[in-house]
Length: 205
Length: 383
Image (cartoon, rainbow over all chains, first blue to last red):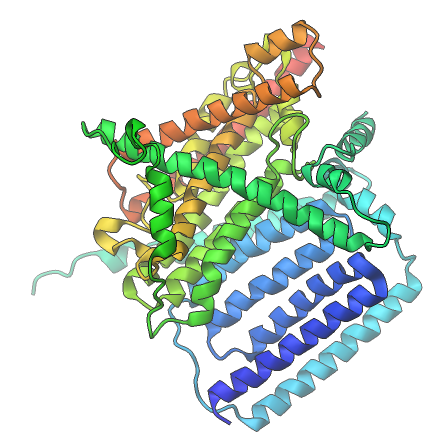
């Protein structure tokens, strides 16, 4: 199969799956189901496109769909703050940096090798199995927070701020993370700094 | 006490019947058998089209204003013929021309991304504008996190611009896209930090509440008059906002004299005009944000007088005055941006980076610290 046919088959299947999930969501849960199907299929389709595309830049752009979909899921859960933080940090900051880094790389247009696809499949299935096991274990042992309560906890800027800075809640973790980031920032500047020796003009022979 | 405030804010935020979408839903005479999601979706579509129309008119006015202002700054007259009076119809004529123009896509371009890029740019700026209230009573999406939402969604336009530059597959466009990515990442930090200073003073993320906080002193208790550290914070904000909206002297991503319009080189017709739409909408948004967090928002002596004479905040008169006040403040900001564009020369990319990282970021941090200390001192002295 040529690359064009592969692309068409992949995107055709993706569109069909997307339409099916939208229809299923609408029929089973009405407007809420439609919205959930929309955002979650956006997330998954973005992730699939990210590993499918041969050009690194297109992969990076498809990550935007994933980030936006996750933000939409947060919005559906009623936590505006998390949704906006997701967009601000991941789309506005991290994705822009990734793009800045990969924009000049050429696409990899070689034939897809079966061995690599098989290897990747093993990793994906194994990894998702592990995640699945952990998630089910965690949901069994922890009390599940109802959506309304979760929304109340995370939608308000004030309650999020209180949780971060309250001495009995997450203040230590918050400050530690801030400290770690500062150290990382200083280290990055140290590594990337201009070494004056490199830039001195060569002496005339 | 803070918890109580949070509860109050929450009850405030879900105040029903004021969102334009909801009003349309109430107004639509629909039979019983129509499912709920159709009504919701229909209300959203109608509300969004009203919003789109209002914003389009404002942007067209901005384009005309830009041409007149730039003309007069350069001792020209600007457009004079279309429509008769000072070329008022020039933007409409331009719009028709752009709609009829051939929409070309280069052969070597990445067609899908080339198509999607203007949509992302336009969609994210509209998403950001939805969080902007038009008066205390008129709003589209009143969020407690208004300023946060605006910053988040308007930073998404970067991705669209980078996408346009990369998909065009032209060296000028690619350079424009690289510059945009570097510039926006550099200036997002001082932009957010300088906004933190008034957020300290006003104590809210919500634009409505920020405006209400400044309603004292007969509508003149503007944040900038209450805390001296907000003056340098506003200057930093303004420089960073110019860089975020890609306006001269920070118009390096387009830089028509060196990059031939940069990321827009390969675009034509209506797709090209989407980028300009975004630029003017972002200018309006940034100016309005400055008005809300430094210059009183809806508040002016006029609203003070209305309050004193007992006019309700939810009445039509009050809403119109609020909308007019915030628009006048916004357009003063836009005029300032135009004035700077036609006065200052473009800075080099290394100067842009130096200014953003080495000067504006530490200065913004200093302003945040200073504003916080001033507030704490005030609290100690007056309470």
